[in-house]
Length: 223
Image (cartoon, rainbow, N blue to C red; front, side, top):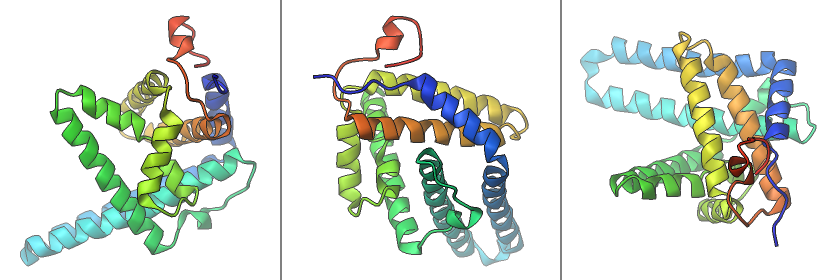
């Protein structure tokens, strides 16, 4: 039996309206990430004489910082979808959760890279199948392994649809990056909000059947 379809129109509408309403919050978060990157560059340049040890330590610290911010960022997106009113303080999360998220990102990246090395298709398949692990984790899933298992369940039967969404969002962010990087202040929040809405729809509907109906109809609205 088919569950609820993914309403892409509803997801995009939510993302755009929410972005306009909370632009200041998202700008503050992205500026914080940018500030962290600037600090990283300053440390690396200033500590060139210290060699590779400082370089590695600085980059690891930034990756951990960035992972923590990502957790807070996604939690804020989900809270906004659920009708909450998160603040900038919600960007910062406990360090153990940030460390677990970073471990999950590394595992996901390795999985996709190895898959891409096996004639590309396995990498794309794995990338889509486990694409929801981050949302599963920030939704307080205690086990790292369980986040990937949960993602596989949620994406089952919706691989084609989700792949089309990811490709569209990738192109959107490429355009944002091409606008001197300033466009990312729009495209990154809109992308995260869109995927938050998709995740909530998948979680609520437990969609498990069929390819993207909208693609067959050449009307990218629902799938």
